[in-house]
Length: 252
Ligand code: SAH
Image (cartoon, rainbow, N blue to C red):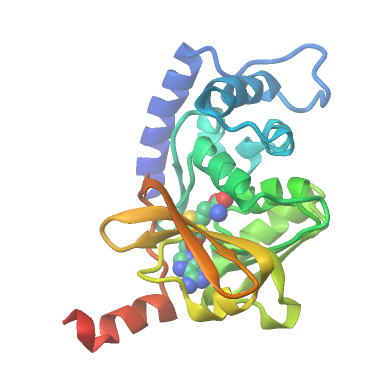
């Protein structure tokens, strides 16, 4: 999307947000520099708690992480709207509810080590970092990885490590992980990511091509148990996952 298109979209979204009474200065908010505290609380109540996400740690993280700092500046006033937003390079930051739902499905504890494939803006990684112990995140579009690394550092999320590259092969040096999250959709789960999941660990991913299912896979002592949650639409996982799918003769 070009700069002009972003500006036009920003104007529409900001008008919508203003009509909803979303942003606005907030006397007495915890962080005096954060004019979006009220918008964020409304987002958590209406979009997240209101739709059934109940994990207190997830709700707390969603109420804390300044989503407006992870979207392009002209879209800051739309950051708490109930929708995904463009972040450049043809990619998007997921809708807040989807971020919360996926995080809840990972069933994280404070000491858990999490691998995320698809850093994008770094927003979901920041949310994970408030609920888990350590976050490792991989982004294939190098300028996005660099920008996310800078944003996370600036905001003080010290327990997140960002790597630029194809996430297909995971992060073997840091495996096993208690949880693995994919925020781009592969046709099938890359086997290396299943290998890097600890026994008892959870993997959450949108799986499929045109139609995707949000899928939770648990590693048991003897194998893997898979559960489909709901139909979703994510950007496709690129790199080796896409190449393998295209090369697979059984699909021609
Ligand atoms: N979690 C992100 C949303 C990311 S959208 C956020 O909070 O902003 C999905 C991201 O996955 C895109 O940035 C895309 O570039 C990335 N991606 C796609 N295929 C990938 C791959 N093979 N390895 C790593 N990242 C990938």
